[in-house]
Image (cartoon, rainbow, N blue to C red; front, side, top):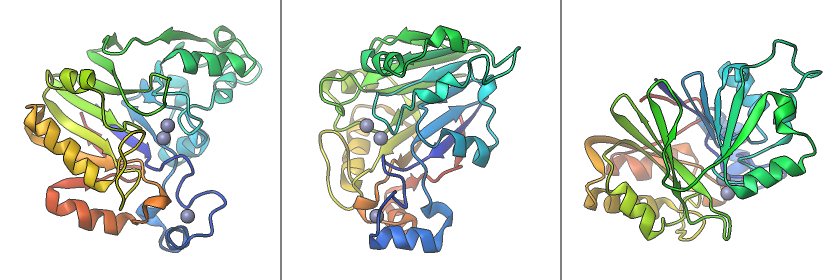
Length: 272
Ligand SMILES: [Zn+2]
Ligand SMILES: [Zn+2]
Ligand SMILES: [Zn+2]
């Protein structure tokens, strides 16, 4: 099943909205893998992670069919990961009848609240909401299971990442993680990851709570290895970059390549 990186930027995109800085100017000039939309992913035709402000642009860029999505997994309520108003366009009047296939939106209490506050009823949009519980697996049918794991990212809100399992293979989606809490490390110690996606939002400087930098990615990778959570041929891939991190794609690759870590870009695909 194909897994696609639809966006690999932090909240402000890259080049960042409103930003006159040097690395945003460089990204504009160089283009290609330096152009990063807000973070989202798709697995096959039916499963999508996060729906941010670039959802429309991602549909056009990657020839997506949102009308075929059955499960929308939301990591947390921050605006770069959840744009609730876009769900409204599933309703009659915006989408024809028969419209898109029924959609289940999965998320925490704050995600549910933001969707409710957007001023429409999800049920009128051929969709329903399901509250997630950290570490409780979700059966997405056709052999795909997603398990939300707790991040250390959004204060009181229980921000999550997802572990996706499909046909005996396991992928960890790790953006907006911070340094995971103990219970998450304990859960990951029970898994053998074939693909580990780890954020490097802060690039050349370290993070901790909320987000990570490039050096932290090495620490996370080493910790996962110590726990026996990495398959011997596990692909470790880093994503969710901010211009504030200062490193364009080539510089990120120069840092990570000697460590056997790949750098994601918009449109990158993997087989899960
Ligand atoms: Zn984010
Ligand atoms: Zn900038
Ligand atoms: Zn966030």
